[in-house]
Each structure stands twice: as C-alpha cells, then as structure tokens.
Image (cartoon, rainbow over all chains, first blue to last red; front, side):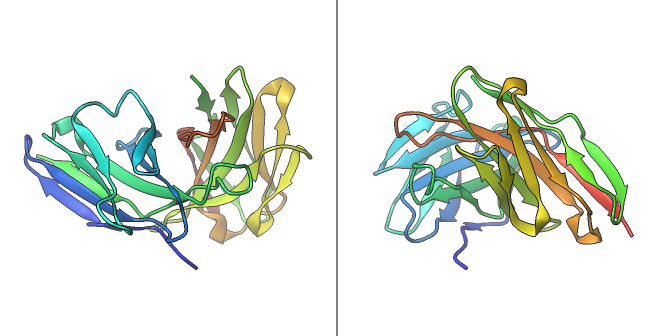
Length: 116
Length: 116
C-alpha cells in the first residue's frame, strides 16, 4: 500500500539555523499538508498546498516558514531561523482530492525536530 | 474557527470491555468528522470518517462512531476491545468549504491502554 514518507526521522539543530524537512507524498495525490505536534499538545495544522501554491495556512505559519514542491515527488517545509519553540514532531500528509470521497489525508511517520 | 474536545485523555480497559471515547466539536457550519488512530511506533491512520448520510459510521477493526448533530458530538465506540487496540486515538474535523484544501483540527487525543 502506498505511504507518505518523511526524512529525516529526527533532526537536531541549533537555534537560528535553517532546517528543511522533506516529504514524499503518495504519488497520485494532489494536495499536500504540514502539521506539527509540540510534545504534550494537539496536532496543529500549518499549511496546505495545491497546484504549486499555498491553499490555506494557519496563524502558526508565519514568515519563518515556507513550503515548496521542488520536483515531481518531494514536498518540503523550510524553517528559516529556528527557535526553541519550533521543537516538535512535524507530520506531512497528502490527499487525492478535496471532495468527500477523495479528501482523506494520509499521514507520514513524522520528523522529530529538536532545536537546541 | 473550529475546535475539538476529547474528554478522556487516558483510558484503561480490560480486554473484552466495551469502549466509548467522547469527541465534541464547535463550529457553526458543516464539518467532516474523522477518527484517526496511532499505534505505538506507527503513522496516524484513518479509522473512520463521516461526511453525510447515515450518522452511524462503521470503520476498520470493528470501530464505529455516531454523529449527533444536535450535540456536536462524534463518539467512537467498540463493543469488545482487544489488547491490540492499545493506541492513541484522535478525533478531527475539517470544515466543508468551496474546494480549498482545509486542514484538520485535531483533539488532544486519548491514550487507550488495554490490559490483557
């Protein structure tokens, strides 16, 4: 069964550094999403992406964040200058469409980001 | 903005016991409703979803959920749990909109432990 994959599984970085988290969505899916989960808190929506542009974003997704689909398979989340509070598990998801029969979001295993 | 409440953060049951996990949401418009499960060391996986029609929805592994619109609830049930149901369970909603890729709003999750 096709799966969403994410790399790396764990990323440790120094405060102020840039990080890029990578995701490979399911191949026939057209909609891509990033979520994060700070330890002990809810899974929170960050951004969705369709047709090479952001479809929706939350208040969390400020100018420090950006997303890109650099090629036909990868979907990336960049954090420009990491802060301690960016430490979290970051989940990528994808869906085939947005109609009720196609909008199930399939999640990757997550990347644990630790900012020191 | 929508929000989701899961009232039981930790539940411990014995095998063969019946399960009901509560989920309430707040949003003035039409929503789609989901239950996701995360088994230890695995991805978030979809258990079941409700979009329209019969408010009693059946999912995988013997789970079902009932949408009660008047109560803004979408409780998850299973008549007889197994040790393998030990996992984290997340209720989620997204609003029905005009075609944008809406992010899911998650509850905090319920950690379910089944004792043999």
